Image (cartoon, rainbow, N blue to C red; front, side, top):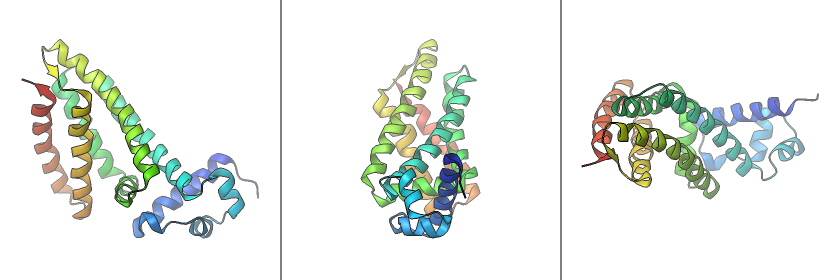
Length: 196
């Protein structure tokens, strides 16, 4: 049976997310992907020449692109610095709440310490940070505020957010807890993201 590239990659994508619901990131192998998907080893390596590393890279980039679209769409719609920051962080937290399998993927591969994923994480989130920083800085200037440096904003918005979300996942994803974390973190992020 001939399968399109997009269907093959989607099958692998879905299988990996399902796998990580129960297993550790380091337990994934091409042999397991073969069993989960019914694809041949040759087909898997054709689409993912470096095997598991390329598979994780593809899943990561796909999820990161989805997350960037969600955050970028919200940033364009708002005119006030505080509201834009609030909506950006709210959407980031809500994405993790609504996309359990995607959120779980980020959590597990981040904890696995895979160098290729760490590099992708830095690359993808630096793109996201530049986009968010640009919009927030523009709005802050209109309001007479001075935004902290981009690397500090990145640490505050995405570093701290990621750690808060990972802790929430580790504690069992209690919905009420996420709301409290978000509300309290929003206040902290607002104070830390501007100078003076």
